[in-house]
Image: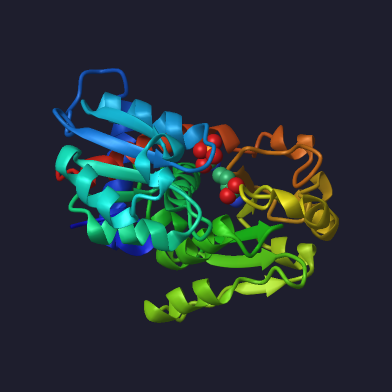
Amino acid sequence: MKHFLKETDFGVRELAEVFARARTFKRERGRSGAQPLAGQSWAMIFSKSSTRTRVSFEVGIHELGGRPLFLNKNDIQLGRGETIEDSARVLSRFIHGLIVRTYAHADVERLAAAGSVPVINALTDFLHPCQIYSDAFTAAERWAAPGGDLVAALKGRKIAFLGDTGFNMANSWILGASHFGMKISLGGPKGFEPGPEIRALLKSEGRTEEFQFTTDPYEAVAGADLVYTDVWTSMGQEAEAAKRLALLKPYAITAKLFAAAKPDALFMHCLPAHPGEEVEQAVLDNPRSVIFDEAENRLHVQKAILSLLAGGK
Ligand code: CP
Ligand code: NVA
């Protein structure tokens, strides 16, 4: 059973297929097209808040002819202690696929292992692969020649990731950069270095590509084609908000810091943003900020991922 729990669950050929299908879905949206999820129901179990992921998946499943079933974890017996394994086995008798947003990455792996339908990771504390594929597609749209090879357009490009360099978005970009053939430089304070889990995953996949970590934000952005940041207090970290705000302040994307990247560098943020914290409003408003294209592309890229996992053309 094929799942999409991490960036590298799709090989390079499948990645190219996802991008090609996303480009077609984007171009042909609204015209009657293929409905690879016709007759299917996909459940979405969410334990955390969501705007983009929830809406893009619900709309995407609908547009592919399927039916989304949104299940807040606390509304189902999983929230009252039914095991992950039994939940996966039961749901697999009804549905055709499962989309999960939760805390522990291991919980998504357990659902995938126990069930008999494809599982998509819609964000864990460890990784957010749907976001990274959409981000990479968004950058490739800008960097490729019209109609050109989207995957090839990423090769050799440098991303600078600033701020919380030890959590899901940074981890996912470390793995993603390696998968896409990009270079990555992370800028964050001491104590926020990429952790042992992501290092172990890179090693287990035999990835020798190195990532650079520096406490100097200007060193991180030097020569970058893409400057990226994320919130400083992720879902589940609310109790640490004040401490994080103080520690991460030097890594805010100011207009001055953004100007230290390449002159044509793009700015990205997975959103939601907190203007005045991790990024200045002027950077969010910069013509090279592509934050809303990233958000829109969640729809097209996830439709491509869904159609691939559903086995359709
Ligand atoms: N970027 C992202 O995943 O947004 P949501 O939390 O709104 O889904
Ligand atoms: N790091 C953030 C990403 C939100 C899309 C969080 O986990 O809350």
